[in-house]
Length: 308
Image (cartoon, rainbow, N blue to C red):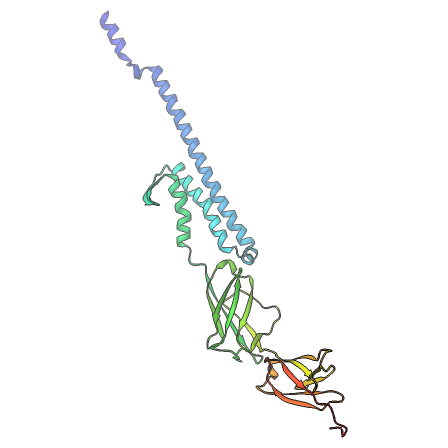
């Protein structure tokens, strides 16, 4: 009798009894279900991050011209890397249950990162590193009225570009072009102010802007207008009004203070031009003059009784 009791008591150890087996099975089932739920959650998070990145890229393709005009073409690429980093981290460490770590010394201490954090930062950083340089080079060629081969300025002077308030200056070379290297991609497709720095010359267009698209552009230049200015005085050093001042067929009259200013187109300028002045009751005055120089004093002599 005692042996039967002993055999019955040893037939089902504590951890193998039907009740315990049922409890263990229930625990395993619950753990598996929880595990599947966690995997699905991370898989959904990964899919969401991937779809978000695709939407950003789709918006860039749809409105590419707008983003280029705003100088945001490169910036959008970096934004798309962030949801891709989330997608990679969620998929590798949540759905696939992978693991990675990074350890290094930075800022005087030890930095140790593990798990999803590494993947989240690794994807954007690799994207930055693998992305080719987004800077570009742009050349501005200047020429005269006869066409692109009319090199009025070469190996002298310079061109100026205003890039977001920062002025850059590059010399004009033998081919009449000034090359600006390393321009940030955010200026691609934008219209920016441009200027010419060459003695005796100026840009033809009043709206001095260039659109930074393609690799180069051409701008026509003109010789700068020449200015003749000064005063008309009589023998007593009094101002004379309504004196007609003439050069190259262009004329103007002095004001009440005897002041005059006469502008001559740059393509008509010569080293020395003959300036003349006439007024009722005065002898004709003539003298060679140079444009853009100091004020010219026209000394008018009154006519004598003999009309001279």
